[in-house]
Length: 373
Ligand code: TXA
Ligand code: MG
Image (cartoon, rainbow, N blue to C red):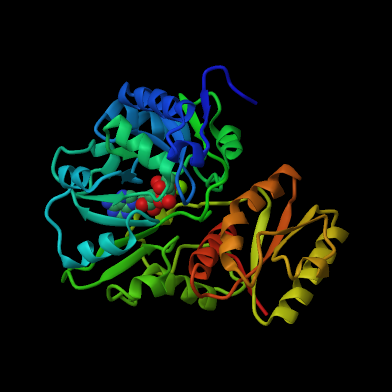
């Protein structure tokens, strides 16, 4: 699997934090590749990112090529220190400051007014804003700091595939297409960062993409507008029960939200309702599909897995700790592909905490096909 053209550095988080020579040397080598216009995948606390110097248009262009990413979808710029922020954004208000103080480093991306010419226009896709975050991961922070570059990094997957939560996922998608990969083991959160923008009056935030920082946690710090994506996903599920794939309920303000995402190769449907009814319906659907000769899959939770008979039954994690389901979701979606599963039914989860982000990714993986029972 290891491609000769791609350098892989194994870096233990604890060793890097303790200043172990091998780990420090590895980060130094990866940083040099970035400084020289290379593209390097690295872990963050959410998912693996594919990084390049955000000021280097040629390097950023290579990210889009490696991923097969549509060029109108802007990238997040990753920073390691607040001094880097001032170089890439214009002065911002109180709400943004409160968010940074509370959630950085961490899985929150804030869309801010861009300082003209500070990062490549390929990063912002020509917008006058730039999305920034400071990841909470020692490998990411050291790599950014040592390179001295603001690092533009989308998730390190081929466009349309589930985001990588392990180094092996990056290899699966990008071996031979990128210059290097820093492997620090599985990521923690497992879903991408929450993306927010500040509302026009400067008083609140709008959630453009639910993620690692929950709606409830944001609300403790700043007002959150009701037209945020978290609410519209719930609306979409209610509106479109049983209907085929389509657009999201509201026009996407974050360009990336309009693209198909996270999808396994098999056709997936998301089943919503009372747990017993959901289980019965899924089993009926599986039985019917098996009679048609299809290879079937069920995506469930540890507690419910024993109830199902299907070709492949996978639990993303535990219902009593939805964080574990977030952590395991993308690996499970990839595993269905490994087994060549053709039809998948996924159980919905409660929409609280990380459950908002989990439901957002599940509905995208299902192409917004819902069954409400
Ligand atoms: O956790 C994460 O956010 C990961 C890790 C690697 O940091 N990154 C990630 O990047 O998920 P990506 O490129 O897959 O998603 C970036 C999202 C897209 O939905 C994009 O449209 C949005 O952020 N975005 C970027 N710049 C924006 C801007 N100026 N205004 C609005 N949305 C923006
Ligand atoms: Mg992505």
